[in-house]
Amino acid sequence: MDRLLPIEAVNCMDEGSDFDPIADETGIRFCTVERPGERRINWFGCGIEIVVERCREAMGRELRRAPRGDWLITSNPASERLEGYCQENGYECVGNPARVAARFKHKRRLQEALRDLDLPRREGSWTRLSERRMPELQSEFGGRFVAQKALGAAGAGTFLIDGQAGWDAAVRAAGDESVYAAPHLGELSLNINAAVIGGIPCVGFPNVQLSGVERLETPWGGYCGNDYTAAGALDQSIIRDAQEQTGRLGDWLAGQAFEGLYGLDFVICEDDGRAYAVDLNPRWQGSTVLSIQGEMAKGRLPLAAVEFAHRCGVLDEEEVRRRGEGFALPVEGAHMCLRAPLRAGFTMMDAVLPGVYEGTGGGRFRAGAVRLADCAKSEDWLLTGGVPRQGSFVEAGALLARVCTRAAVTGASSAELNGWAAGVAAAVYRAFDPESP
Image (cartoon, rainbow, N blue to C red; front, side, top):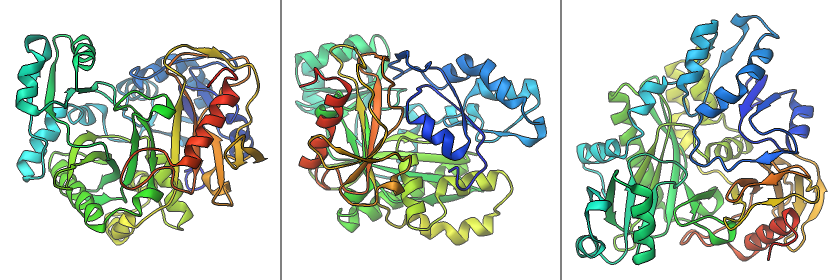
């Protein structure tokens, strides 16, 4: 987005060696919760508010570099603390108010929307696992079923129950909370970016979503990447179905006074081949950054940029409508999000260079780079996403880095990694931790 918008400063959780070339090229200043060369936190489940809390002083120093009226401040997902900070200090906060976005985080709202719109719905029920027995629910939903907490992101709070171990883990995690129990429909997941802009639903191109990939050290249901290139090989009827459902949900959101970016996760049912929406994300998603780069590579103005420009008064509704159909066109690109092994943390003994690599086995370093567009060849891949510095201790389960490429890393019929992508992931793990298998 820095090539389209004058980004001056970014607040975020992680800090990495790839931040140096980004800062050198763009001039962007980073305020991070993590300190250079120190502990890499497993932030899954922490929430955006911790960034505002921990970076408040550093953010204040950056903002004092220019008059208050020169700044526009935004956050994805929306942050109540950031909105409060801006109100207290006289800065303009741009984006959907956190209280509005929060209304749509609860999984019940998606179920409500699907019923209202008569869209495919995973038939289930809200229940407390602590008050039920596994055989009861298996008789209702089948031998393999899913339990989903009301709130959660990146797959946290979603459990596959196909035996006693899965049941015990879900019961422990859910406690006395109600969960949505429903049949397990299949393993192939799609994700899509969209936005309500000036009341107009704008829908992007779907991607194959990676979740629970063992080679990426991710537990079942856990988010670990997206693949737009692989989605290009999907049956067109599936793509159109997902886009149409997303647009209709956008109309529903607009009717509920929602404005801004949103996304949907779908599961492709193994029985009927239909896309079933299982998660509504009223925010910037993990796939959004990849979508932005893919759209720019095609010479198109990204959906996320148009949404922000409209909020700032740069583009009007007529311009949004004119560009609407273009957002739905295919894009290319994929990324894998590598997490530290869940079994134990480790210390980065060696420096791992961020940038473009070629090949799989050890990966030959080609050049320092910061964008997917810097991958000139189809066999190139970019290591980025907060690469831990030498000497850093990485907590178990923490996000290590992202591997980005123009090529497909998975297939259009499953979320298993292609052979070359699995080789790249293994090589990166060995570089981070020489004791990795």
